[in-house]
Image (cartoon, rainbow, N blue to C red; front, side, top):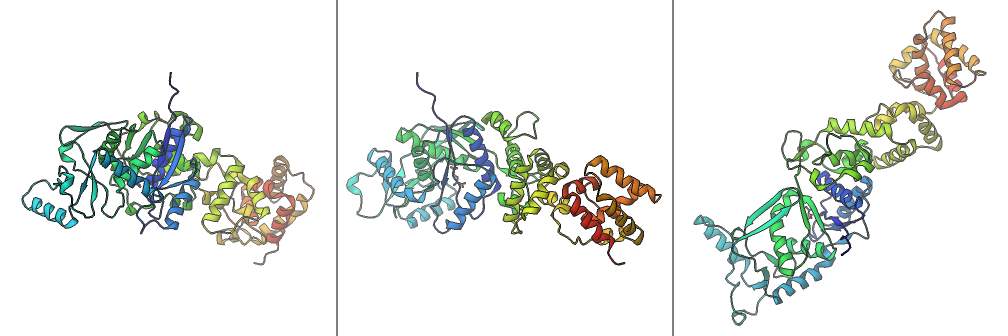
Length: 471
Ligand code: GLU
């Protein structure tokens, strides 16, 4: 019995300057598929386009992968560094008779195509060099073309699209190595995937038409063909192909908006893949459930409302420590000042009363503003209006009573209720001035939660500050 083959998947982005959410989604699918099966997930940077492949553009991909939490095995592979290997395989195919030297110049090919267009014929170029005897070869630069089958069909058994059939007479003898010695994308991908041992090619269906040509190289070389899985692209809410018009297209745009990475993984997993009706799930569940059979054939639509609710669910269930780590990362990413030790401690303590209702990290920070603010608290206009002379008097009295109250919810509740009643007020009337004093806002977590989080000394200090305001 042979040992089961280890699964190897990859993401092979071309550095474009941002990590597109489509790329992030494809990376996630490959990552889930490999990780759940004890396989490997590899990263290859398709950096053969030297003009676009700047170090910054490559870094943008690494940053996107790291932010999303998709770890890859080994070092990122540079496709450009493998050019000699690509050329070697093109020559090997030549030697084996699966390829031929084509001496046609670019001008000749263009002229052929133009004439074909004018006559309404197929513009596929059929090189006269395919069957030319070596004796006729000029001493001139040549491209290496695949000697592709001219009749019959090339069939791709796709794990998502099903059986896809391509008529061979619709495919030309593609160039694998240009006359300047550089490999084409079509060759490079196949050689790299083969050498990296990739068993499953899971990628956007904009590459489906490349699959038959790539399969022809595998078949000519006698290499084991990967399982193909071409996933529908992500569309905008209007059903059109996702573009800048629809808003954020880079994965880091979502990081900047304060979507926690765990929520982004959940949301991206559901873009094109489903497990029954499950919308909200953990990484562990995604790993357990993910399979190629769950990928649909219809393009998924981006839905920011849904992303918000997914984010809210994750924020509510994340551990306080994980949330604090996300917040630290979010602040750094958006160029905001890091939290001081004190702010970190207070916000961490406050998490229990904040995380149930926030749909993003900035919303969480906004709700936790009382824990971050330093004295003196500057009330906003609505809060300032609560601090009239009568309220300030009550706050002053309270500071004395709170000196000796035991710092528990029950005692604080009894103390505050009693103070309100002593002035013939309902507690609700006192809540406004307390919120203004403690947070400088009129919408805050409960007064008790704020007092418990910041503690006795800070509470008394904030009440004293508010009580001694002019006005
Ligand atoms: N470099 C290609 C892209 O960014 C992906 C190639 C592949 O996955 O085979 O679209």
